[in-house]
Image (cartoon, rainbow, N blue to C red; front, side):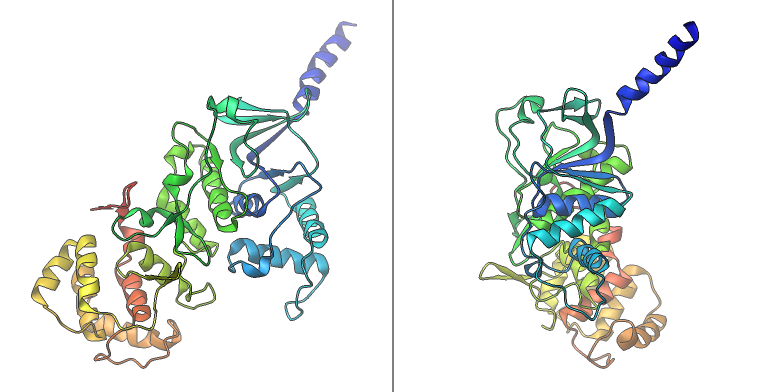
Length: 395
């Protein structure tokens, strides 16, 4: 009897523990945003559970979305599930087909789990994370919680009567907050600042609108950062999260005519978010104008704001054309590089690496595309210069 007592004493905690599912990120909802958040969290290397209270997901038409990491991941899984080669067009993505693909994805994934038709009756804090009570005996514990659905059951734990989802702002160059963007909203001139996503005085919980794929992806990466580094969402590293999202092809700036397939997309995104080259808003959309020639006056002050040595260079070079030769002079002076070696390197890369349609010509006035690529490669303002919570440059 004594021996059996110790056996049962050992088994009981295991049985109780088996009723608690542990994960890194828990997403509540069945929408575009919930799906994107779960996919991006797993793409960023953490475990994620998407908990729906329905038969599955109700997603918008993927054809209307930009080709970012989430849509590409979905297409890849769809082809694998449907056994289609890349040369064959995907069929119409009805809800039935979409949910069959996602189920197959969840069943075969080590990181992503989707639990459908499961209600929760309480959500409460559990240490620095969260616990969703499914029944009296079963719950899910997560380090970070993402809400893309009804929030009513969570409000008591937050000790508040109401909460608004993260707002996207219209890009406004009279302030610098756009530099803190973690998602450009496709087809608009709006962006989501990391600091609009984080909830003041609330750790490891994010609340987003249900319909936006880009914002869902940004929330997934932000949650993954906190879970992976075992930290609080309030301590999110802006540059790390921006870099992660760019690596998964999410535009931080919603340039209408510079899509992910563009060979210079990454350089234009990185320079665009610095504000060294500013875009135009027309009819609610955001245009970078990549083939427009660069002017002296549009780059003078922004580069001075980023680099002390740029102030000296511009003072010594008044109102000159921004051709290739002068741009090389500037980046070499500011970045402490050899002029002749830079000219040789650029000539080799001009068409082969950068895929420029123009010929290498030192007297050529540079387009905004060409200038962005050169600035990004030789001065690296996005990587090397930090900004504060308001987007102000820190030097």
